[in-house]
Image 1 (cartoon, rainbow, N blue to C red):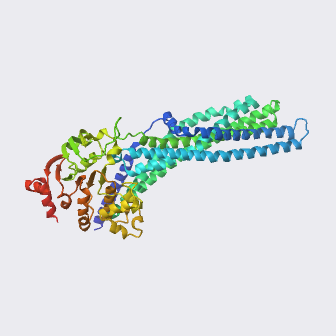
Image 2: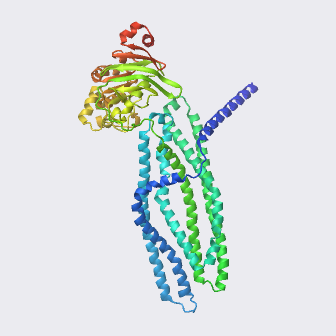
Length: 619
């Protein structure tokens, strides 16, 4: 008995170990996307190209404040040396309190000027920096709106979300403070080097001999730091993507009691993210001690040689103190430049991901010289249409279909037969691999996408309800519609009654995806939205699949009126939805096997007849 329990326990343990290894392998596999490549100067220039529109605002005023602040800061050590050599311990031994008061007052005035220039600079650099971030985020979002369905087919929503939020946000520090601080530090370094050489060129060269040494050491860290921040961005992207997926699929997770599995995977991702951040942060922190050590060596050289120069009469005590202050001010910008480089690496890691999306070309675009599609009658033709989602795997195999204006066409068939592919091609969400789709004789690839889709209405099975009021969700079909028009289409699809029973009627606020509404109610709203757009071609993709029988009966009469005079394509499995269609097209593995009216196909006794019999068998 005991042996049996131990054996069972060992089996469970081995099973858990194997399971955890699978999770680790899954996670490690996902990290293979990391690409090790050098610093891209073209990308650097492209990123900072976003500042060009604001150069006229940034350079004159902010540049003036930057130079003014730097000059005042560099003047203070010189006044200090004068105070020591001329007022406190002059060569003739006659101290001068009056001169000391004048120099002290001058230092105070300089600090006030420096403070005022800093306040002005910070205020306007932050304003300009936020404008740049706004431009980057707008460009990214606008481009994402233009991308085709095949782009989103390959990427989870969370991966797209993190580019627009986290990756853009990581640029804020660079554009609000980093760029101007870089200007300040560069101007300050040049000024200090010039002053040090003017005070005593021997001592200046001796102190700065440590700079090349520090530069050579620090460059070895750059590649590792850049890759480390790439890893951080990638790990954070994984977390955001998984988080979005988990929230969207929380019902499924809880329904199958997979919370522990989900938490294990998230915990592993979280630990890896923390580990990558600690690694990158540790590398960043190495710059500080490096500067401190180098600065310490420089200070040692300064005082050893400085004392010798004072004894030899080449340097005064005041100038040595000023020299010491300048050297201190010299290492501060060097340290900040090191931090700035790290900040730049973080920004470059994010910009790589941002520009990856911006450089993605939409597969569906207006060809050069494309003209707007005129107001259509609704004649639709498929001429030997072949389509492949992946090369070599045909979803449609030479489809020929003629639909007259005002006809209703029902598309039926087993899952994967090509029904949804046909309606996606009508709206040009994808382009045909071969053949052509014509509307009123116009090849839809020769007209503008906007003019085509504005005349095609779609109601999907998975209805999306936006955050906002019921009225705004219906008006999404045509933004300039009046309240009366909104209510009119709601009544037409029998949605008015349930809307009026809501606490705020048409002004009732609904959350994302309309969680407070039933599936049938959300579907009715999508009907009203599509009908408000008044399309010449109406596509119903399993639009009544989620509506209960009672609700479906209510809208059958409304559909007959609303579809009258419109070319309509109906994808449905329910017999009640398709039996009155003018033509029923039966698809199987991407080919049209049968077509005709409901009665004609029943008499034929083919695939459609079998589908009808199967439906009645399960009723």
